[in-house]
View 1 (cartoon, rainbow, N blue to C red):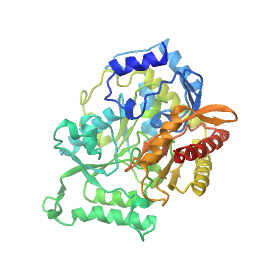
View 2: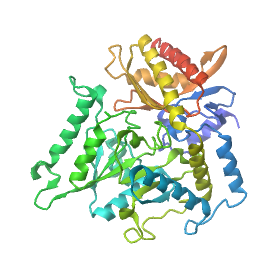
View 3: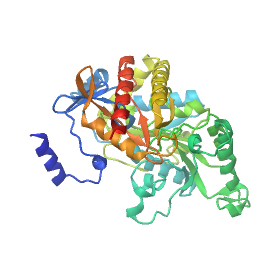
View 4: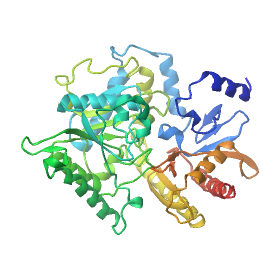
Length: 454
């Protein structure tokens, strides 16, 4: 069917309630490595890799092969029965957590990040007997009702009635847009002190000093904010925050759905900050986008069968064998290669390229990165005032496929995030080649020039 006819049918028969229509719909027909291809064969260098779900490249031969093999052996089985790869995958993740943080724990699977966030909310509420949570301004945890309640954007809640369990949203240490006169570490300590002030008196609304109890059960965090714009906190911040949480009996729930599986050069991004979570939620890149498998790890005292018995949550497709076999192969692949050195080296090269672009384009107000999670904040020529219209133009031009390199038409796939929707959030394939990073900088330079010319 011709693309125009497909788009007409899409406009007639598909809900617009998902995210396709944030910009003009684009149809892709093939993918490989770091590239998507449209029906005309135009290649689009993808610098966001499905919101970091495809960390290991499109159509990864090794991961695709185990999926094909599983289809021919045990492609499906009801989730109330066991199969080998569920158990093996859970063991690897739980043993890794024990080695890193010293806690026994268990894995609980589901079919997507939002669903696993909801499972974690049930786990926390079951353990603490309370339904209120802390979360960050700029934080994003999904769009189920439970996950929406702890996601800071009112836009996601506005049309769905009152959320009585809406989180208490705390400022994230966003240094570029924070108060002037403090270096990054000073600002991190300032933010910890600002949060700890809530517990100084019962009249601050969260703490009963007579009972020694907080009204809030847990603090949900993304170590590096995803949709919020890949904001990287000061290195001292989470140690200070964890000290406060432990002092007042509040659990730390870490959302690694977007930053997990070596996006930042560690299996989990929280490892960069020297604190141990009580619960950790993961998803996306576990299966390289081949299957909607996600899950959580929790400390044994929160999730053992005596306190979280069979049937505490359920999903028909949870821990399905097509997902767990790919997840298991992902973990084996990660164990065989020094992904930390590889990702940190490529990240340094990518960040250096962005800083070089910043010298030529004053509209790039801030660049930062950790591993291959990188950001470029697009501003007015003053380098600070947010410039969403310019970034919107860049995204549209990139998706139009009209850029050129060595006489060949190309496109560029970018993702937009940030508090003002003016941040390019870069999440390229962890397998991206040096030449592809160099190509990315050439195309970005061209994109800036075209967008500014109108």
